[in-house]
Length: 576
Image (tube, rainbow, N blue to C red):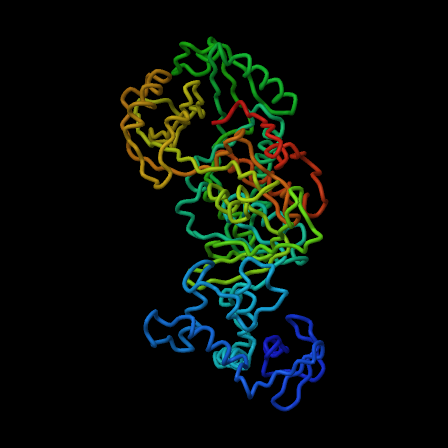
C-alpha cells in the first residue's frame, strides 16, 4: 500500500529524515544523525538544522518564494503556490536559474545543462511529499480500490526506451520493439498532438508502391505490402474489431517522356530483379489498356500490376498505436522543450577536441502546463517534419565536429485537392504519376478524385500555416490533368487540404540508424513523403538494431547519418 513512501523518505543531503550511517541516495556521501544535527562523514562538516532552519521544507519554501518576488515589491508568492508554479517553468522560462542560490546543487549536477531539474527532485523528497502520497493512497482505498488503474497514473520518471514522435513511424517502431520482448523493457512515446490533426500521417493520401530506383526503398515497400496483407494477424487486439485499412489494390501508373524513358527502364529492371510485379507499356499498349489516357508526349509507362494501391493512413496509425499500447507502450502527451545534456568528464573528448556530451534526460511540458524531466536509457527520434527542431535541441548545427552538421530535414507543405468529374474514368483508374509531377487517383465510387503536385524549389509554399492555395490548382494542376485525361474537362473542385512532409534536402531519402555522436540515440526521419508505406519495414529494422545489433533482413546502412557527414547523397529518382 505504502510502497512509494520509502522512496521519498530515503536520506538526502539536508533531509530531515535520515537513518544512522547510511549513504545519501543523491550524492553517495556517508551521513550520520544525532538529535537535530547532520554530520557528513566525508568532510566532518556538521550541519545544524536548528541553527540555519534549512531543512527540506524551508529550502523549498525559501527558494521558490524568494525567487518569485515581484521587482520593486515586497510581495511574494505563497509557499504552496510557488511550489506548484515552479513546475510550470520550462528551461529559460520564468525566473532565471541561479546555481549560486540553489542549496541543493551538488558537484554531480553541475555538468548538466539544467541542474535545477535534479535539485528540484531533491527538494521534494521530504516529509510533506510522503504525507501527500499517503493521503493519495488513502483516497484510493476510500473508493474501494487497492490501486489506481494505469490511465490514472502519472507518466513515469524513467523509461528504458523513449520515442520522440508518435506518428506512423514512431508507432510502428514502438510496436515492433514491444512485440519482440513485451516484458523486457519499458517504452514510452512522446506525441504533442494525440488527435494528429496536423500530423503528416493523417494528411497523407496513403499510397504504397514498389516503383523506386533504389533497392532499399523497393524492398521496404515490398515488406510493407506483405505486412498490410496480414495486418489483421499482426495488429488485432482482443475484444476489438480487426483493423480495416480499406485497401484498394490498384497499381501506380508512372509515365515518362523520351527524356526519362531510359531511367524508367533501368528502374523496371531493378524492380523485377527484386521480385516486384511491374510491367512496361508502350504508348500503344497504354492506349489499349487505358483508353481514356492521352499518350501525347509519352514514350513509356510503368504499371504495378500487383502489390500496389492505397489505403486509409489513419486506420493503420490507430492500429499500430492501439496494438503498441496493449503491449505496454505508454503514449505521453507532451511538448519536448529540451534535452538535459550532460558534458562528460575531461578525459572523454569527441573528434573536435570538445568534451563529449551525453543525453539521457528529456524535459517536456504536459497538457496541464507542468514541466517535467524524464530519464531514458535509449532514445529514438522520429519527429517527422519537426525532427530538425529536436536535432537543434541536441546541439546539431551548433557545436564543432560532428555536431556542426545540422539535420537536413525540413517541413514542406503539400496541397491535396478533391474534385468531382462525373464523366471521368471508372473503377479501373490507377494512381497516375505524370511527368509534370502531377498525380491523381480515384477517391471512392462517386466520380470523386484527389490530386496534387510536387512543386519546384521556387514554388514551395509557406509552411507557417496549413492554408490551401486554391489558385495553385487552377494554374499548375488542372491544365495538366485535362491534357492527360480529357474526361476531366468537366471537373469541379469540391475541397482541399494541406499537410507537411519531412523533406530531406540532401537526397530525399530517409535517415535511419544510430546517431553518430550520442551512443544511445537512434534516428528515423526524412522520408520525404514516403513514410506511410515504409513504416512497417522501418519498425522491423529498428527492432533488429536494438536486439540483434545490426540489420538482419533489409540492409539500410546506406541510409545512416554517415552519408550526411561525408556529403555523399544517395538520390532516389522516383519520388512522388
